[in-house]
Length: 416
Image (tube, rainbow, N blue to C red; front, top):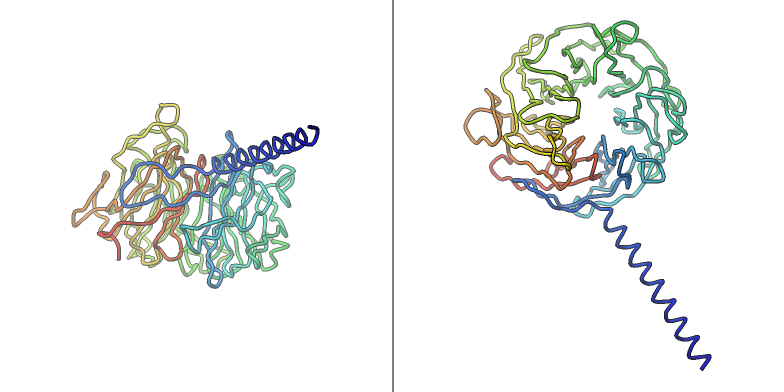
C-alpha cells in the first residue's frame, strides 16, 4: 500500500513538472508577436522576440550585415536588461528561419546603430547618460564602440564621451564617425562632432562644425563619403566632406510642409536625396501627415523637389485613439529605385521611386509618381526602422511594440 502511494505521488509530481514545463513553453511562444495583420505584397513570415517589457521599447534601430556566407541583423532593444534589453544578434541568412545567435548586454537610450566601414566595429549611440546597464556608457553621453570581428560575440571595448548621440554616422570609406545630438537650443550645442575610430577602443574627437541655428537630428554620407546631408528638424543641409575633418556648407533649405525633418539620405547613385518628415515626433499624428520627399540631385549643389508620398490609410493606436502615422527610418535598395520605410503605427512600406514625379497618396500604378509596391500593418504595429536584407528580397523591421519582424516581398510588378 505504501509503495503504491509512493508511485502515485511520484506520478503526480511528474505530471506537475510537465505541466509547468508546458506553461513555460507556452509563455516563451507567447513572447513572439503574432504573424497577423493586413497588407499587400509584403508577407510577414517571422517575428523574433527582442524584449519582453510592456512599458519600454522592444525594438528601435537595426543594421543588416553580411559576414562571409552569413547575414546577421544587429537589433537594439531598450527594455531593461532582465527583460531582454541590449543589442541582439539575429541570424537572417535564411529569413524564414531567423533566430537569435548572440547578445550584447548593453542598454542605451534610443540605441542608434551604425557599422564601421571595415565591418569590425559596431557603434551604439546614446543621447542621455548611461545607467548601470550601459557597459562603457555609465554616466556618460556619446557612443559605445563594440568589437564585432566575431559577430556572435560582440564586445564593448570603448566609448566616445561627448555630445549626446541621438544618431551616429559612420564614414563609408574611412574610420570617422559624425555625431548628431538633435539639440534644438542654438549656441554651444549647435554643432556636429567628428570622431576618429582609428583605434576603436579609444575614439578621438578631431573636430566639430556648426549646423546653424541648431544641431541636426541625423546625418548621412553619400556612397563615396564626399558629401553629407543633414536632417536638421527645422531645415536640411548639404555639406562637402571631401576633407572629412573639415566639412563646408554647400546648400541649406527646407521641404514644403515639413515639421520635423528626419532621416535624410542620398541614393546610392547620388542622383537623388530623400527626406522624411517625422510629424509629431513619433507621438499621435493623423494620416495623411508626416510625408516623405524625393529631390533630384543630379546637378549639385541645388536639389529640386520632384515627388512626395503619403499613405492613404488611416490608423488608430491600440487604445483606439489617433496613431503615430508618420514616416521614420528608411533604407534604399542598392539600385537606388526601391525604399523600405517604417511608418510607426502604419507598419512598413515598400516604395518604388523610379518615376518620382508629383504627389502620390496611397497605391499608384501610373507611369509617373512614387509607386506603393507593398505595405503591411502587423497586429500592434509601431515600426521604428525598416531595412532590406542583403538579398533585397526581404524587409526587416524593428518594432517598438513587437520586436523584430521579417517580411517577404511578394510583389511582381515592382520587382526588378
